[in-house]
Length: 172
Image (cartoon, rainbow, N blue to C red; front, side, top):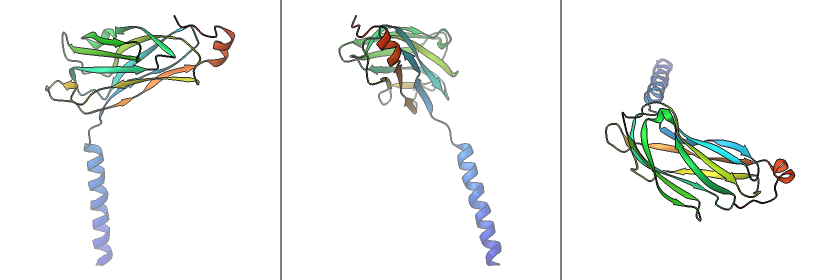
């Protein structure tokens, strides 16, 4: 009888764990891509969303190494369907703040949000990080409540050989 009771409890425990894992919602992920580049070359990185529960608007900051990278421009991914504005660009600190709000509809698909262009200024330690930062309560869902999310940083893998064979240092 004790063995049967233990088996029933074990099955119930496994079933409960399975239901809680299946029922758990995945967090919205805002992610910066990684690309390869050489000194003096333009590199394009994307900011994208995965597990999108529906975004109505928000603000996000892109932080980058200003000694290694020079921010050139940002363009909105066509399928994003929102108005995006550069609110602040502090090139000395390596920080760009973007605000976005629903235009002709809320964004409910996974995919690209922004395309960021940088020029690789100098050879670094082999990787120039580009990070996405979203302050608490700065990402709004279609229900006009703050979304829970996680961020994934990216950056530029510096092609040291191509950089050494090309240009040693280009700051403009």
